[in-house]
Length: 466
Image 1 (tube, rainbow, N blue to C red):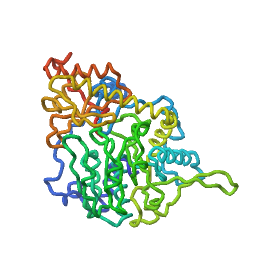
Image 2: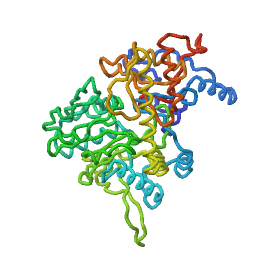
Image 3: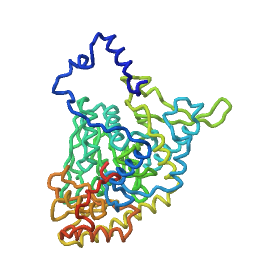
Image 4: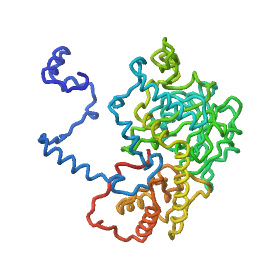
C-alpha cells in the first residue's frame, strides 16, 4: 500500500483522525513560498494504441549510439557487450537478483558472486574483493572510509585528475565526518600529478587515478613510495586496461577501485553501474559491503554463504564498517560472465585494440588545423583534444553531424574550456575516426550540417560522463 495512490475515502479518513477540515489546512505549516502553485496541465489519459504511438514518438527524439557514432567518454564508454553475456544475465532466475540473505535458497547466486570476487582479485592483483558496490564513485568513498578507519587519520590527499564526479561524491559523503580532503593539482603540461613532490605526511590515503580522467597513465608506484608508513594508496583504475597495464596490487596500491560498467553492462542513461572494490587480506574486516565465502555443508559438500557479516550495519548498526549492506548482483554477474568470456588473452586483445586505435585517433585529430592533442604521455582509451574555440559549442555541433564527443573539460578545470575528451573503444573503426576528423574540420569551417535547417537538437540519451 505504500506505493499506491490514496483514495478519496483514505484522505477523508486521515483528515477526520487529524481533526482537519481539508488538505489546505493540513499543509498550513508549510510556508506559502515553498508551495507549488501552478496548474500542472496534465492531459487526459490516452488509450493504449495512442499511448504506445506517443511513447514511440518521444523515444525517437533521443539519439543514442544506434544513430550517433560514440566517442564520448568521461566515465561512460561504448564497449561491445557480447551476446553470450546478455543471454546469460537475462535469464529469469537472475531477473530479481538481490542480496541473498538465505544461503540455502541462494547457492547459485552466491557462487556467481564468489566467482565475481575471485575475478576482481585476479584483475587487480589483490587478495580480497567484495560482491560489488553501487558504482565507481561509491567504491572510492568506501575506500577512503576504510583508510580513515584503518589508520585513525583524517587527512586524505586526492589527485585532481581523479574523475570530478568521484571527487564531488567523496566530498558530499564525507562532509559530516570532519575529514581533510586535500586536492593536489596536476602538471598542466603532462596532465598528471607529480606524486614524488606531494606532501603525504600524516595522510590516511593518497588517491591516484591511472588511467586518469584525461586518459593519461599515472605512476602508482611513485605514489606508493611517497606515502608515509601505515597510510594507504588507493588506485582508481579502468578494468578494461588490465590486459595491457600492470595491476594496482603489483604497483604497490593497497586498495583498488573501479567502475565496472564496461564489463558486460551497456550504456543506459547513466546506470545502473557496478563498483569494483579490492584490497589486501590484512584489511579484510574493514572491507565494506557483502562478501560471499566458500565453505562446506554438514555433508561435506561445497557451499557458499555471506561471511563476516559482523562488520555490517544490520548487526553492528552505527559501528558498522559501512552503511552499504547490499550489492549490484545483476551487473556484477554480467561483469563476471564478460571476464570469463574474454579470458586473459581476450582482455589483453581488448586493451591492445583500444591503445592502437586511440593512438591513431590522436595522430589523425592532431592533423586538423587549429587542433592539438594535449598531454603527450602514454594514454589508454581516451585523449584530450584542444580546439580553437569553446569545446562545448563544438561538441553540440558535432552531435548534429552524427558524432558524440566529450565531455568538455571547462566545467571542471580552469584553463581547459577549449578542450574535450575523445574516447576510442574497440567499437570505433578507422573509418569512424576519419569521419570524426572530417566532421570536426567541417564544424570549424562552419559548414552547415546535412539536414540542419530547422533540425531538432540531438539528445545524447545513451552516452557521456558518468
